[in-house]
Image (cartoon, rainbow, N blue to C red):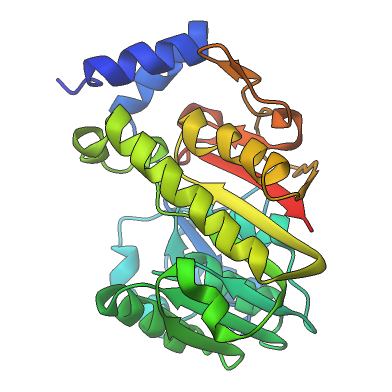
Length: 304
């Protein structure tokens, strides 16, 4: 029987109170299979018709008009439509950061930690393959996955760079919008993979929280005046989330922007944890695996 590590249980029982039992129930379920239509290659209507004729059942994702929850006996990743690049497979939570960032066709956008490209490829579609996206990641292996997904999407507005996100200033560019979807403890993804429970620890959370602050600072340095950052994690830990939102406002001088998203069940950020009060949590969104049967996520928007 799968269960949470002792430290994990203690922490999130304190954070969630009576709702902790709902988190435990997520150990016995899996998130719904989700696809996002690649509107650069096929229309939503055409893909829906094509897949339903094969016997797939598609249900609209309430917070994204071009995404579907899918029921099928067929292996989605082995379908002809997937190989043709007609859709992208992802967890439905990953749709949220690009929607909140809302990149426009005439903007210069940075995806600071882009691989494997679920959010980058979505931004390509939102921008109708116009403007410019710099999609950055740190290792050859991750760059390969990112490049393959961009190629399959049909992206022509994206330049891939490989560097440490802390050094992005070396590009000599400034950006209208930046997605900072940082490396994190991934505590919200246990519903997809139990292995993260072996990786998670307070030490890991603390170490990653420090890295995340440095990445936020690096992003803020190349953001244009009036530009916006969306910071997101698939972590449920306040040290990686609300703490870093406060850091961005108090130490980097960024302005928090309150965000909402119709169709998504979420709550505001945690107001305090272990005696630390988070002053700007009301501007953020966080949701747990039991809220939407997706991975858990935290998202906030910051303006320079």
